[in-house]
Image: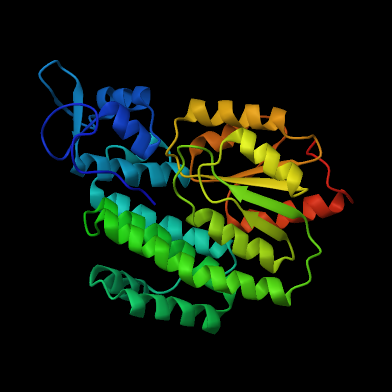
Length: 323
């Protein structure tokens, strides 16, 4: 999920224009990459302010978000950067279908997905929450997270990119998911014996989005893990202290690409050094930097990779770090 203002964020004076640093923060695409694409593929095509600094309009920012989603799905820049928006939407739909198949289920049908988006757009918040809670009961928590909530979260983000949702509507959706998922997780905790690892979940400072963490917490709890969420934006020193106090076996972090790649990798190296060797560090999310995670860190590429990660932890026979 992304939350970006529509006014100029670090340069210029026209509403709807964003400086290159703000675009890098919002999309996770580096300034150098943006400049290379501009020269090589003819997109983006920024405007210039009075001193020649690049300014990107909202339409290009939304398209860059779509491109980032496809990059995260494994597409190469040469195929997608110059593609028409209609082609990008088609590729995204194919990527979602492939992801649903990988998770072992079928994503909900497009009309059902559109019905949830319609409730959000019409601000029928209570009805939206009721439908989500009913879906958890009807489908079961695991299937609902994989087949409905994960793709719906992606669709809400993409609807914002297309200009179909406002930032405050994204926030309503996030709060609604929190309100229906948290009780469901607590119900599982009461009914499921906790025989798995102790897992501490959070994000680093600057990473404001926590829905991915919530979905991971739901699936891990179903597997018998004892989960504790610190919420978002926890400083590394506090993460280390919390891990010690809670006797955590695993620290799990989520990234959406909001932070620059260099900052992500630097903070992960620092955190790995600060954590005891016996505490595993897991990272997941859409940030492409995670594919170059430092040694001793497990990259959980998607929700389907959680089970193999737990199997690896269990196979070691004790809570020890990665080789």
